[in-house]
Image 1 (cartoon, rainbow, N blue to C red):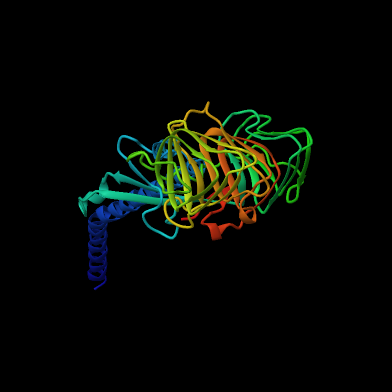
Image 2: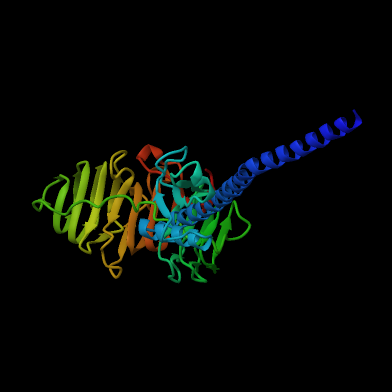
Amino acid sequence: MYAIAVSLARSFLSNRSANVATIFALSTPLVLGGAAFGVETGTWYFEQVKLQQMADTAAYAAAVDNRAGKASAVMLASAKSAATDNGFDTASDTLTLNTPPASGSYQNTNSSEVLLTRTEQRFFTQVFDTSPVVLKARAVATYVSSANACILALDPSASQAVYFSGSSTIKLVGCNVMADSISSSSIYSQGASTLSVPCLMTAGDVSINAAVSQTACSSAMTQLAPVADPFRAVTEPTVSGNCQNSNGNTLQPGRYCGGLNLNGTVNLKPGTYIIDGGTLKANGNAVITGSGVTFYLANNATVSFNGNATLTLTPPASGTYSGMLFFGSRSNSASTSITLNGSAASAMTGAIYFPNQTVSYIGDFQGANGCTQVVARIIQWSGNSNLAVDCSAYGMSPLPVGGVVKLVE
């Protein structure tokens, strides 16, 4: 009986060992496959994290260029460069830049959206699925403006890009002076001029040799990022059509060839006045009125207003040229300057925009309720004015400066 029991026990143990070996042999591929699957999916997760980092840096770089008013091609190149520095493969990965974003909560022109796509090759997991693994990442960066300007000089390097001189007294309420120039004297003052402004702001530095009172800043804000031309997206009128007759006391909008001389009492009907070359001139003792008007100066046309003329002009309150009183063609020569002169009885309301020219602002005039904005390549100021920022009633929008770039999505 004892012998039989021992024999049965040995038989059981032998069979159990065989069972364990069999189970181990059958389960090993599953264990190894599961481990391989875990390693492979972990690699995908790691690559997804890297791809998101690329998208974040690319969107931020694009938003910085967007804040400076750079072209779409420049923004795209910056986005690709930033992504490449973080592992983006230009040969196999794809990058799409949308400004403004095509989706999400920040579909505005201040925001830039980057979409990245990468295809990962399968190894172990192709046993279960042969379709490619596509990784995607999205990021949105925007810039938020911290202040507004009434005076903005666009030249990137000029000395004295904003120049205050003479015995002028200028007071800016709620809006600043900004110069995009990196010069050490990008904002310059001299003589007996007196300037009261919330802040002087510049991409370079200032040279102050006259009385300046900064009501919101203890000192000038320097070494800032340059800001974009706020009117860069405004389309220029087409210079075409018959030349209008400039005679009479009532003038209609249209094309005026070789300049426009305004004498005596003249009323300008609402619309766009295209000055095709020559000079837009208001002669001595002229009384000029116009509501809802924009002057577009093309083919190097200039402006000359006699200080004794009285001008009461307001821009359109809506439409393409909302808030814009003067618009100098972007192709006008930088050597042709613009001189605006007027007496205290004059009121030229609206934006004065000459992106490629120098504007000399002389005399004691200003816009209604202080609503004058000057955006030009270089600005020279020697008049007495009080400027303000709340001018929406005249179709004018604030001029944002000092934008801070941040990731938002």
